[in-house]
Each structure stands twice: as C-alpha cells, then as structure tokens.
Image (tube, rainbow, N blue to C red; front, top):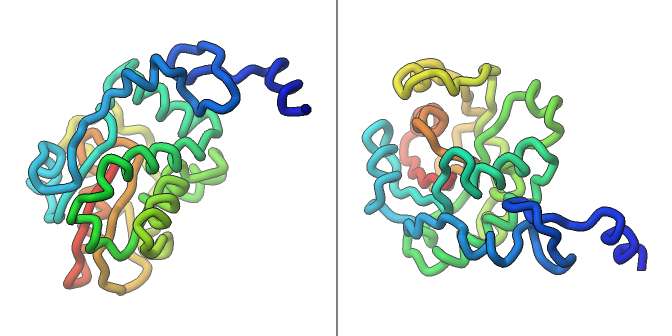
Length: 218
C-alpha cells in the first residue's frame, strides 16, 4: 500500500528518456532497454579493447558491456551510478554482462574479483565506490572471491578529462599501492574505459608479484 502511495507521489522514471515506468521495471523503459548500445564483445583476447590494453600492459583478456559516447544511454547510466546515488545499478549491469558471457572459457579461471579503488577523500565525498556492487555481484555469479584488500588508491587525482592518453598514463603512475603479496587470477572491475590509464596503473602494481593473471571489465 505504502509503496503504491509513494510511487504515485514520486513515480519511477526511465534513466534514459525520463518516461514514467512501472514499479516492476528497473531503471529503463522498454524502448530504452531495447536500444542499449551493447558491444557484444566476448571476454577473450580477440576484441579491440583487449588489443588496446595489451599494447600497454600484459593482460589475459578483456570485455565491456556497453559502448560509451557523449550523451548516449551509457553515459546517462554511468551518471546515475556515480553521481545520483544509484550504486545498485552496477549489480544490475553485472547481471546483464554475465548473461551474455557466462559460457566463456576465460571465466572459469578467475579466482578473485577486484574493484578499482577510489581515494578515501572521494569516498568520503561520494559516500560509496560505484564499482563495488558490480564487483560483488560478479564475484557471486562467478562463485569466486570478492577482494577489496589487494589494491589501495594512495594518490588523489583531479579530473584528467583535458589530458591526452600519454599524459593521463604518466599522471596515473604510482596512483595505486598493492597491500598484499598474494598471487591470483584477477578480474579487475571499473566503470568506464577511456585511455586505459587507470587499468595500466592497477595492472602494473598487481604484476609486481610473479604469476599474476589479469582480466579487465569496465
């Protein structure tokens, strides 16, 4: 009863177009759900994301759920995820990605899911790390360890949107610190992929210990 009353006062709206949606739907109306810009990239070493990252640092495989572009549906979802206090969006997107990749052989070897950490100053300001629910959900779906005690973000960086690829990579050097010496097959989870500076910094720190294998999912 109260849910019906509240939904009449504060109706749920589609994150894509703003249309009012029924309470049983999540985040998007049927029309926007049907135009999700899926990459259809499998978790493997045969897509352009893997090639781009592996040219900078050694990884086993990579994948991405959606294409990101200015003002597209993905950008709107990421905006709600990061800035509008909807971290649970990440778990929903993890479900979508897993449904499309659950039969991939690369998944079987993953032992530990690591969210890219944010700095404590940003965590205090935002109140949550937006990639954690996605990483936790993936760990559950993969039946493996959720690991937030391997990497720590020790340097707080200002926005780097005005920097080019190589300047971003240089600025991200030594941003992360490894806080244990365990070897594993890691799935690193982030929200977006642009120049690759964040994943390169994380991977370089993880690869300081021998016998590491890395998989990446933004």
